[in-house]
Image (cartoon, rainbow, N blue to C red):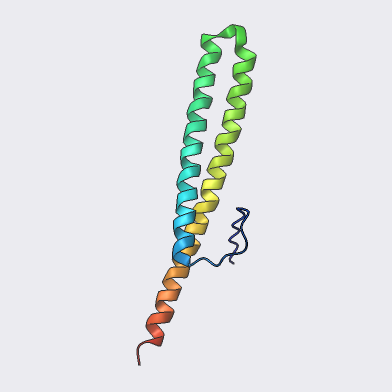
Length: 104
């Protein structure tokens, strides 16, 4: 099941599994960092509710938005992690295939 969608406004390019692996690892790490940053901001806003009770409602909304962003980023990181595993499997299969055909 291969579903690599590179929608970056470019024509359809053929990528090697190694290029796909690098791309998906990069996106996975970016998504992990985003999830971490959004989580930290959600915690910060949660703390602000106690520190600044006058604006508690605004801080609560900011906390919930940041938490939703963190959840979305974590889900995207998980998706990219799955693609990284697929890419590694593809590379392994290609190596096995090439190895098999050159042993006569």
